[in-house]
Image 1: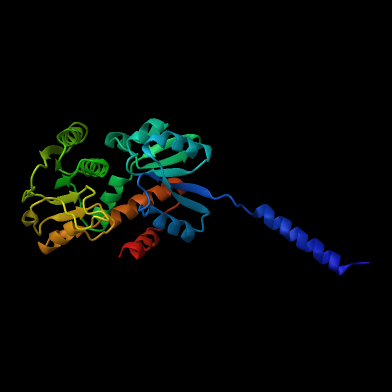
Image 2: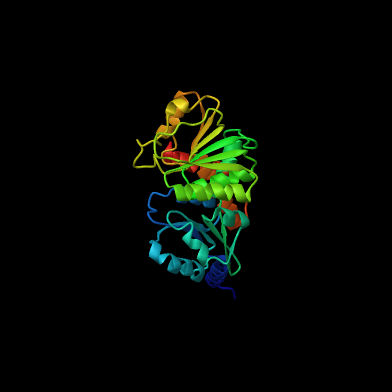
Length: 304
């Protein structure tokens, strides 16, 4: 004799067991280490990309003080995280905790993205690549044969300068307040790439040479909350023949770019660089093609 209630109970129990066997509650973890880091917007675009692709991944924004970086990298290994971004002040110090560094990151001397490959942690630098893609795709500018002025000599400036040189830029002028840092970057470009580089000390208002093709503010001047600050340059020296770029994504339409627009220059904000470097990181971590449009819209919803 059949007992429908028992059959129904048995069937329901089997369905539940099958469902539990197929479930995977483990999220794959990536994120960013920095200090300060609360205003870093990378989580916005990466989480949007994960959701769009149906991935059970999480992007964690983690405050890591300089003295705790070694322990944080050990934690990255211990928790089997798939990778991490590095922001200020960790892009150089992290090198000593990695198993391998990509050739371009080694040339730049800084890492902003770490990916896990088996038991290895591999350092990459996507900052310059993100800028270069934005320059080519968003501004429609090929740097080959061009003359560039880079304001600053920090991590972003190093990555952008090296990538411009690799892409065929003819001349690169490094404008920086600290002579040692600026000279070291110019020497690096001269010795390791085909480009010609020179250093100019930034001890007064800087006038951009009229034959310059690309001007890049690679400093943090104008970053939120100090949004009214602008690089100390002679704005009259900016012309309509130049492409003027800013690496700052927050806010993307900086005072520096507004000054350039008043003089007819083509401008490129830092939002594209942020999106593209994030897209490169997404592919490094997941192995999947990134939904770039989704990532850009997510950031635009925050900043524009």
